[in-house]
Length: 311
Image (cartoon, rainbow, N blue to C red; front, top):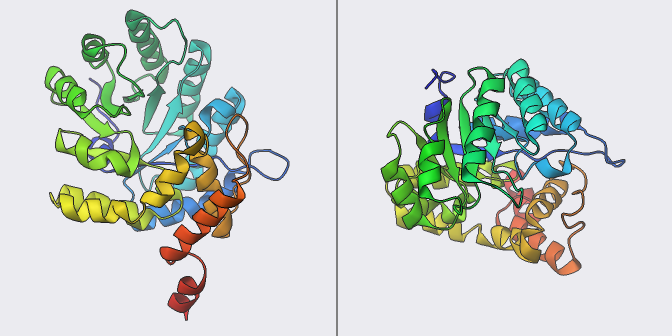
C-alpha cells in the first residue's frame, strides 16, 4: 500500500464533503462559484472535499469538463484540506481523469462503481488496478453503491495496491460489518449514505460519512460528526432529525431531486450554481420549493430568522 497524502487517512474518518458542479445560465461550467462554498465548508471544519462525485453530477459531465473541474477545485481548495477526485465511466475516461487528478494535485481518487450492466467481479478488480496504475501512487477510495458483487470480491478489491478506503453506499450495515471483518484493518470505511445513515453505519465500523449538505449547511454536518465521534448517538440522531426534511426532499422522484434540492437551496442562499442537467430533475415543483424554503427558514439560513440573527 503506498504512503497516502499526509492527513488523507485521518480526513477520511471525518466528513467527505461532495461538492456541487456549478453551471452558468448557458449551462457552461462556472467553477469560480464554488469558492464561497469551499471557504465556508473549510471554515466549518469539513475534513475532506470531493470533486466529481455524484452530488457533482459526475455522469452529467463530459470527461473534459470533469478534468477542468478537478483542476479548478484544486486551485480553490489550495491544500487547506485533502481534495479527492472522482473517476469512472469507461476505462479510458477513468484513466484520463486519474492522470488529470494527479497533475492537478489531488490527494486521492474516488473510484465510482462501474454502472455497466455486464460487470464481472474480476473485471472490477482489473478496472481498479488500471486506475491505480494511471494514478501513479495516488491513494484510491472505492465507492460502492451496492454490494451485489459479493463480499469475496469486495475483500479482493481492498487488496488492490493503492486502495486505502471504501465508501459504503448501501443501506446494509450488517453486510458492512462483515466486509470490514474480512478486510485489512488499515482500510478506512466511510458511510456513503450521508448524515441520515451515518449512525447505523458508524455503529458497525464506518469511521466517517459523506455529505452533500456541506454545500448548504456544513456546520450541521460537523456537529453530527462530532456527536458520533463522541459516541453520543442520541445527540447525533436529534441533529439528524432537524435536517431530515432536507434529505427527504432529496430522495424524492427516485432520488432524482438529490442534487436539485442542494442547488435550489444554494440559489436561495445567494450562491447560485445553476441548474441540474438532465436526467436529474429541474426545477423543483412548487410544493418541493415551498418545503425547501420552509426548511431553510427553520434552520435560520434564510428569511426572518436569518435577518434577526444578522441584526
